[in-house]
Amino acid sequence: MSSFSNSFPKGSLQCRYYHHYTHRLNLILLISLVAILFGSLLQFDAGGRREALIEGSNKTFKVKMRLRAANKRNREVPAWLRVKAMVTGKGHRFNTKRRNWRYKKLKI
Figure: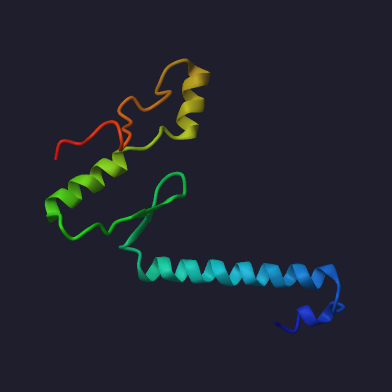
């Protein structure tokens, strides 16, 4: 704990909330450090979900790159573009080429 948290009374809510805040801040710093160090191994898609760039070793490099490209293409239309399409009446409302891993297989 820092000296700032000692300025609050011991059982006060501010003291407890400050502890949670510093814990969350340390966690965010740790995650960002890991992202910097292993930036080539992880990637975040548009929805903020993690996407692993490392795959099983029993694939050729060409197949891995093809799967990665297909994974990047398989995303929804951005929200701002959908709103623009609703306002103007033209444009892309949804991704017609969206693919589900279970039902539509890639021809690799």
